Image (cartoon, rainbow, N blue to C red; front, side, top):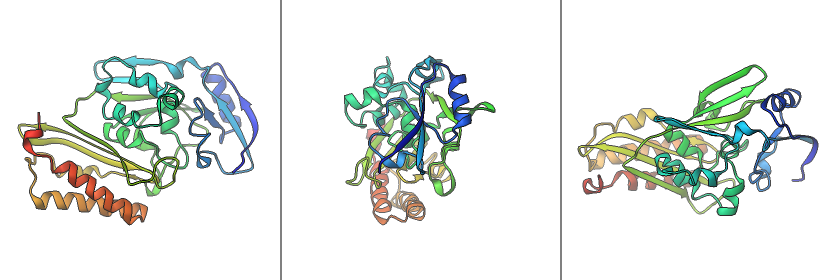
Length: 282
């Protein structure tokens, strides 16, 4: 679908960017442009479009690290995240990023662009959900930090607020004993039915101390209450425990997506992840 661009802004500061967003709340931020050039659903509906080119704003390409988390500017490239010293401490995110496109695409694509897609959740979102990452959002009213799930709206579909700029992403530093990152099914981006899967777990003395599982495409599928039912369970899980968890999560996926294919494949992936033997545990 052809897109008509009516206005373009190339600000050097966040203040200039926010003033432009106030005038054009439906403006599309542009950093690497990889999503916008491959998926028409990334553009807002309507006859004309305003583009906000943010690549000159230094704060959006910055990085700050503490013992507990790493804060990454929204225009920080995916390849730069992979190149961070000790980047494995950001798993499962770094593993998810490694599946995105090729090196040339990752050099252009940004973390903010992968998060703030309008029509679907992108590859990094399930990993960010499992990490319980936070995002800094700015608009004319000020600056606010929110959990990543603030960007999930009714029906567990993407819901990025109008007139708002994603400026930073806070990534908790954590170690997981087991991680799985996969594409669900045979479809890959930019196909609308493409879905990404993330599962990660920690173990303590042969028992599950924490487990998080999410998949996302058109909708985000994650159930924290269901995850907590496995806390303290020893591995290997009983057949009943395994089947109950996998079928309940698959039922949620079907209720949200109306896709039997997604539900069945998610059930199979979850079952395989949960069936790990005790000797696998470090």
